[in-house]
Image (tube, rainbow over all chains, first blue to last red; front, side, top):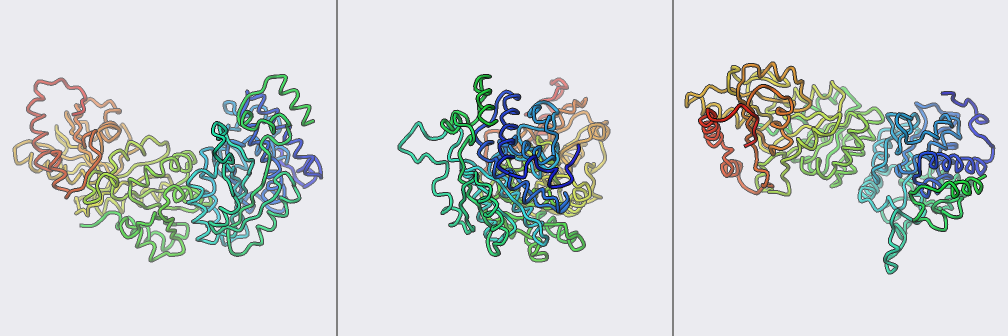
Length: 280
Length: 312
């Protein structure tokens, strides 16, 4: 595989917002080609992954042996990570259209044994933050950091909070969690309007109560994300979490309007054409 | 008489003296499961994960993904069941060399009772790809087992009983005869090897020639090696501190060996209960006399039964 050699090669554009548009197109094309998939959670996390990958994890300055670690704990958004890697020139773009097919090297959920640049296998929700703690403990004496991307629905898993307690106890300042707070989950609670509808109400105050340093940003604003992730690096006493408020299915009006319907689905050819036109 | 958890903890602490990549994690039971020795000697490489087995196993996998060698201690019931999905996803599916040391495995939980009892851990762990299953029976076995796993750099589960155990004698090996191979065998592992040795002695007193084939490593098995070891055996009684389903008898049956295999195990409808070890064993005829009687009875009736595998 041809690997990009310089920052200019790494990006199709100097403007990350343009790249995010391209990543969204790659995601939509790949999901349609594979017969459907997680549109909502893959499109909400695009800016988060683009900023993380370009500016923090796969930077030109550091090679594979010294770079930061990235865990996509919400593994169902795998195609967004693959598309980001393709955008950065780290993965052959044509492979994306074989996503989830036999021996394509791009499993439905990230697989560290099969795909380069995948630092840990995920898919069973709630486990990535604990894995990140292990990595952060192992890399504590180095300059390397660990970034873990979670979903807000994923934060319903008890293991996330086991990890939150443990990371705070150990004061792991080299560990940062990013919550893609897209406000929706698979089936959700709409059948009972009397219940709170958010996957995890009061996200920032909960993390804060668990002893984490919390920042809240617009998860589609690449500059705000970059600022919050940079600030997390200078936090010297606690693990940090960036709560990135996003829109499920961001970039496609139909998805944003009906987040539950487009959490994981297949599109008609008509719908797909309209989606690609909207993302053009 | 030694608790094998402590022997394992001590051995790992010894290995770690010259090996900085060795870490130990524990689910807040270090004073009972054997991790305590490591915690005292290598506090910088010891993590009390707290009462949080799921996070503990995934943290260990994160350490292993960075090239370290984590050993994870807890009671078997909590380690295997509470963290099963984490073992499946973070350990088995990643091929990372995370080793799980499960103490208090099997039916003899003493006062703890059913909540602390696990009788299907071999079934759970032997059905996870790339995870070895070991059951040492004494100090030498435990040290051998730790050294073998360490050298192999693979994921493994070590099942240990709560009870302190005496030596079974001889030199440790993955599988070995305790006594001379003969037509009748009791196949066992870990704690049940001690029951098997006592029962075999009683049977020999009754004039029945029978020897014990002890498995220190339960899974995976080298089928050809096991077939060779059992080449003289016509009937094997698989005595296990586990349910019959998914345990050693199941594994042996799956090898399709030309011998009759009879399982002596905990009843499938029993979940464990509080009680002194011998009292609990007697309740299910798994005390030495009970085992000897069951084997005598089976041999008496075997004249009339076909040479087909069966689970009693």
